[in-house]
Image 1 (tube, helix red, strand yellow):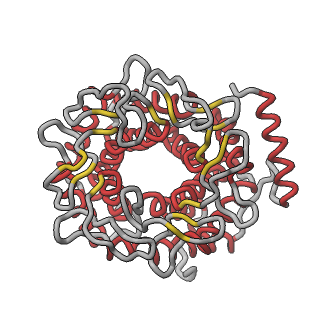
Image 2 (cartoon, one colour):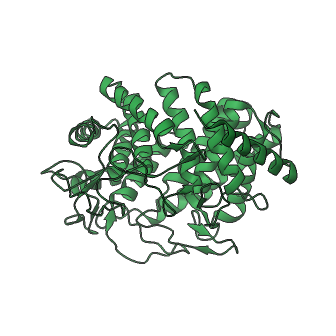
Length: 447
């Protein structure tokens, strides 16, 4: 359990902060007005259909060498050919597959998904040892970073499952099952729980002090990696009903709802030794508000898939969200800052595109679970910030980063930038709307 005095101080501080700012207190419930729901539909459809989709469909499909060309400047202009990273190739494949599986899907997006799947299967899959390379050259014929890391493998699995659902292609499902087997052996850590993360190309272990592609020692475990393993494993179980996947899913649920949570501060720590002993000190005693809040809604979704009620975890969800709202939310302009020290205000005060996307979904999911106005207010203010500042209405898609002074920076596409976070957020919000108020979701006069 959380340390009672710490949580009491946190809740008292949050209450005083919200009252000072004129924001709804905890426990005040609300039912959204029709105009608020129409605003959500208008905004999310406008962003998805007029901003995200046109950019990624028209600018990133590599007709010369396959896959997606992801090397665009801050203004959306293409720099030229670049190596292709599994993380963003898989995330972009996932997005085109996911949009195909939505009410907004068309054959064009399925074709775009097939284009990405063919590149992953033919050029990024290691036919000798199994699993995906971390990175290949622009042609896909030469692996430039051939070793295996489970952060990227998780996105490979996630993308294969979504594409298999969109296309009905049995080869994608077979590849997903083969990859799941590699996650089980040799990657699963039966002694300490969770997964080893960093492997050579042939899936043998590196020395403990080898620095991985995630810039930590090869022996370390990351909350970030395990969060996306939870996401992929949830989808794998949902599709296959595999009992071993269910067992691993429960294990990951325990890790993400308990092991990675520092009960003293109500924060998620990211870095751990192989036995889940946390790395501490000034460099590690920091919280990523985006990961903190992304963890909430992914836990909710995973519990739903295995028919676990979310109510027993509501105290955890509240504590994680309250912390981020107190220290990481910009009460003046809306939106969330990037990161900060434990028990202190944010000191990395740029606003990152993926943080806004994940916090948007988390706020809506918290409102859905509690009906409390403070979460719905947070959702609307984050959406306002996104519409006004994070979206690049001129160059397409979202700005990677907005400084505290309001200046955009960062590549529009690249090794880490894809349509996965923001595209998923828009679809999640629209699908929530279709369930909670079909009369608004299905109306034709909202745009």
